Length: 112
Length: 112
Image 1 (cartoon, chains in turn yellow, green):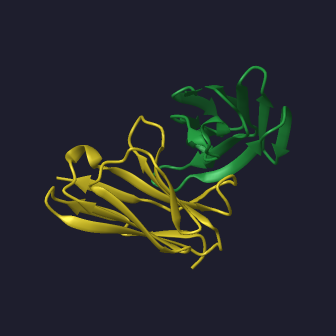
Image 2: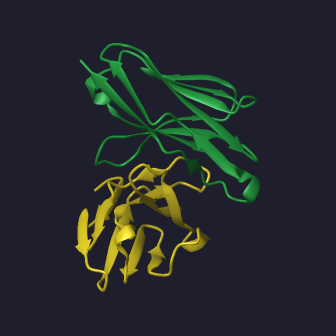
């Protein structure tokens, strides 16, 4: 596979469930990102990892927990989410933090 | 702080030219990106401007005026497949981060 892949593409979960989103990049990049995209709102940066270290955490609630085991993989662990967390979650990678980003297709999350 | 403004929606006719504007008010500036996002798909990188002037890439051109805090994306010979959301993102390193901040995006509808 090439580019940035994300699984699952669609996820429906209850507020008491625990689930994880997975992202994999095949571009040899050093930086990976999680974004939240809600209707009518700008892309919201959630987390940034550079060389597998978290470098940014934009006041994201603790019910979202990122994990970056290596430079190619990024996870977003979800637990006790709220209905307002329903959104498209996009993963991206870049050669370094200052370069253009390559996005995955996203996971459409619905919290019921 | 950061403020990035784009029109919410624009419509244009197939074969025509359309200009999508982006204005920004940031403490610092180190580059502006344009991305295209088709419905249900990942954003894809279109252009990057860091110096004043016009950058041309096929049917798409991007212009930057740093003194005016203004950029536009020019799409020529519009095709139906150009119907998408166009995202402007500005890099402001004054806060210590080189990661760009996104505007809300402009939804472009191309009709026959």
